Image (cartoon, rainbow, N blue to C red; front, side, top):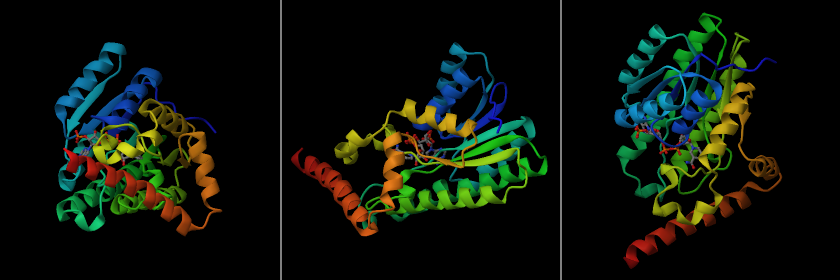
Amino acid sequence: MARLNFEGRWVLITGASAGLGREMAMQLAINYGANLVLIARRGDKLEELKTAILERCSVSVLCIPCDLSDLPAFERQLDAVLDSVPLYAAILNAGMTYFGRHLDMECGILGSMLDLNVKSVVIATNKLVNYFEMHEKEGGLMLVSSMAAQFPTPYQAVYSGTKAFLLNFGLALGQELQNKRFSIMVYLPSGIATDMTSGEKFSKLKGFLMPVTQVAQEGLDAFSRKRKWWIPGVWNRIGARFSWFIPRKLVLKRMARVYQASLLAAEQQKKDI
Ligand SMILES: NC(=O)c1ccc[n+]([C@@H]2O[C@H](COP(=O)([O-])OP(=O)(O)OC[C@H]3O[C@@H](n4cnc5c(N)ncnc54)[C@H](OP(=O)(O)O)[C@@H]3O)[C@@H](O)[C@H]2O)c1
């Protein structure tokens, strides 16, 4: 099967101002020669990234500051992108988490997380799938989920639920596609060392985090190879397979113990200050 070839093609990335999205944008431009549409709320960070990319390679970069949880605004921006550049691929990467006891979470956070992690992805996916199917265009779509989709994650219950939604949504929809030149990949990283995991609450989990460069590199390689889903890190892939043979309640207990310990350590540290 021919690989996706990003060279000279336009690739849209959401959540490109930081973390995994920023790193994938850098690698797509520098290693693959892709033109980029960068989307996130912080326009200044997108412009900084554009400058850093253009200093290193000669591609075209469009920056679109947009809050994806403002769903009508996001739809308008997507329509404008599809009207103005011949899009080849999209990486729906923007996401947020809440780490803490579920009942302590403010309602506003719940709404924002559902809007960003689920609704904005479904809206964008509908538009993009329609675009690629209607025109029988070659290309690809990556949905950035998480291993929290496979391992229900206590103290990140809503996050874990949103990522499980993306896993099933992406895999199921991918099977419906008529255009054989277009593919959907669901990406399932484990913990990554980014702003998302930089807070005190994650301090006891730092040893599990993967470097963002590796996660970006593996994700883009799997995407170009038109994988339906991919987990970065060989031990994560082995662990994910092996976990099916372990009773779920044991996996859940272990997850709860690890995450609770990190949370309690952060709370204790706060009290000590
Ligand atoms: N870090 C991990 O351990 C981990 C593990 C597995 C999966 N993931 C997934 O990987 C993806 C990237 O995570 P990350 O670790 O790179 O997170 P990050 O460092 O916190 O970056 C999140 C990105 O999303 C953007 N974003 C957040 N809210 C937005 C909104 N309302 N509208 C538009 N953009 C928004 C942020 O930009 P602005 O603030 O400028 O808007 C930023 O560019 C997420 O989907 C996450 O769930 C992360």
